[in-house]
Length: 204
Image 1 (tube, rainbow, N blue to C red):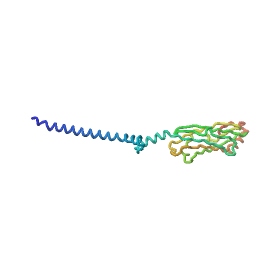
Image 2: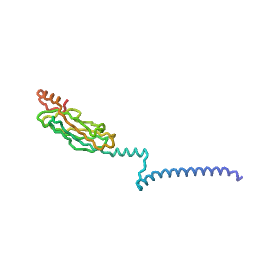
Image 3: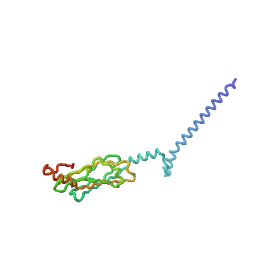
Image 4: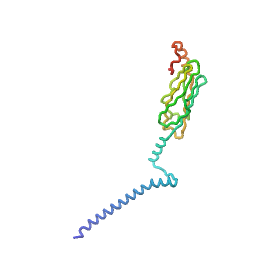
């Protein structure tokens, strides 16, 4: 009678053995997988060998690089010889983070004895970076009128696109003011009838 239970006991022992083997295999796999980052750390810190990283690591590194990126924006300004104005940036340069808005100003003064209308032409250097520099507010959007002897700070608001090529570290924003002959002549013609030629700050 005691022999009847032996097959069942053998099956239970076999199942337990298979389960034990599966558990050992899983543990070995987990241990081997955990060795990969440990091996990388050992190579990079102890031996100075930098191993290739996976796609997830590269994505994280690129994002961190963009978040830490700084660009130097230099400012420059001048006037055409026919325009009797002083014109210059209020600061020589500014460090900015791509994707964030910034503001600066340019100083202008009419050194003549009459009201004059001027128009500013902007430029960005290097030229290939011009598409990555956006002005959200600028005195160059409209012609500017300065009365005789008038001085004014003119604001510029801008954003540098985060997609700016990585090798571009410095941008230069430059303006040249020209005398707007047509609007200046129109204003001079209208002055006797209005009696206040210097009132407008922006020409139509």
